[in-house]
Length: 192
Image 1 (cartoon, helix red, strand yellow):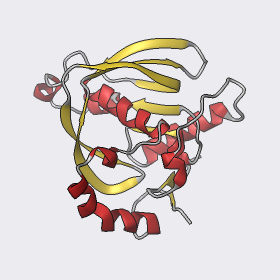
Image 2 (tube, rainbow, N blue to C red):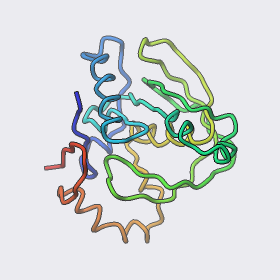
Image 3 (cartoon, rainbow, N blue to C red):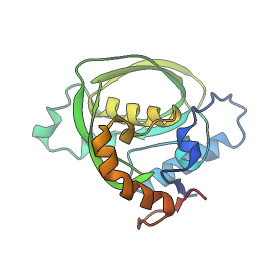
Image 4 (tube, rainbow, N blue to C red):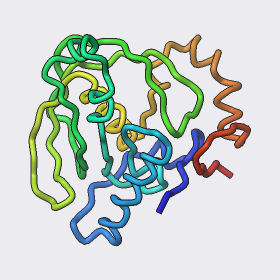
């Protein structure tokens, strides 16, 4: 089932999400719905707060990015084959490498894209959908997507990384999103 995506301005996007247990009600269905919602809205990742659940859960499919790169572009992300993975109760162990800029967008903040600097690598401890523990290091565009989704479970948004002047320049667009004055081709829910 395709879930509505929570728009900028909704308080759930600013909460630090809670860890969950395998007994979390409807977890398998929620994960399936998040995948379906992400693909229906042409996303590469989606976090539970974006579907109005304040839990430490996100899904990432960076494989579709890597698979759609031209051969010469693939050289920009050495060692990054892309992933399709579920992350539950994720916590960052460390970030590393050089920070690099990339033009990011967000399903909760439609039609706004900005360059954001993020670390080249991230190491996470997390459990998968079967609650099997993992500690892995990710790199390149996959690390970026993970860091973006991880921010959602920590109550942060990509616009928080922008300089104050840039944020002020975007204020009217952000206000329009909060008020529902935006057209997108996916379901959204707006703050009341």
